Length: 423
Image (cartoon, helix red, strand yellow):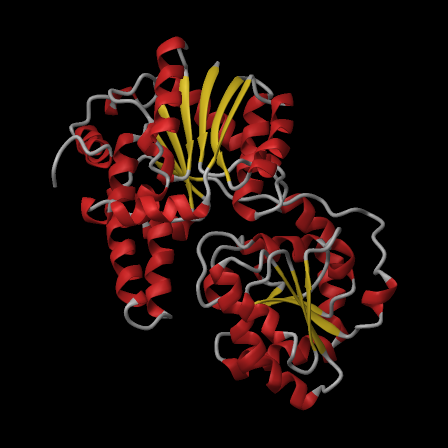
């Protein structure tokens, strides 16, 4: 089959959660199908790096979208009634490129990764449409509002409301919609409102068999570890909350324990944490596995969380105990839940970390379960399900929905975005 693949971020290198899932999906589909990829890059350098995708794609069209330009677009279209995150990506250049491709190629299927780029799909649909929402972003914006003060809380609340309506329109447009967890499906309205939505979970790669703890990292033991892109707001909120409100309770009992914050692009708030006793902010590192191997436990103290936290999966397959809050815990398969310590209050979270450090059974149990976790959390089962859904959509399994009148509402949303009609 010929597949038109749209993505809001260029999926290479696969060094962030949203890019990793996209990369594995694209590579899996490329085994059996011809892929034309249309996506955005944050910089010229990222666009050049992304040309490595040509080994899997017949065509790679990467448009550089600078953050400032996207924010200006979102601000100028604030009155459109569409979500700012959709307006952010509103590129006439990308729209023209996608439409031209659809006119010159007969695609068997269109695959959309993230609802923000569904706006580029021509109307009427030239081929069956599959969309991977990944996470229910509208629910994430609502969480942002909960942990922000006015006027940001109002802005985030509005975005959550508008995006929720848009997500439902897009779900009605698609022949098949995909999310990462059952929680994401519920956030989109459940099976009653999104009857053609399937859960395709995230996977995780096997860690290197022989990964030594670097000598400079070994000197920092014992430590608890947080890994992630440290400019991403949920990560920033989580680690700042832990460093300020939980870690001092741990240090009160175990003064020699350190907190290692590992990940690229640390925000100013994160960098400031390095001034606190026992806190180490590394920035980006060449290989995170050495840090994982040396950790007493991995932490995921999220107050804002959607979908699956890859950092939790990586800790499980590496045999590292995990302490996390209840929201990300709900996204972990039941078969792995017995390996988790779940705590929400600052005191309970600190006590869970202390138990993990003091009692070797937690590390022993995690290490013993690691081989089973590698099989359970492998990428292959979810990717095989994705391939099946693609085959079914292309074969016309969703043909009964092809003339749904709700497709017209999404077409109207696209017209609003293009400025062809008035709200």
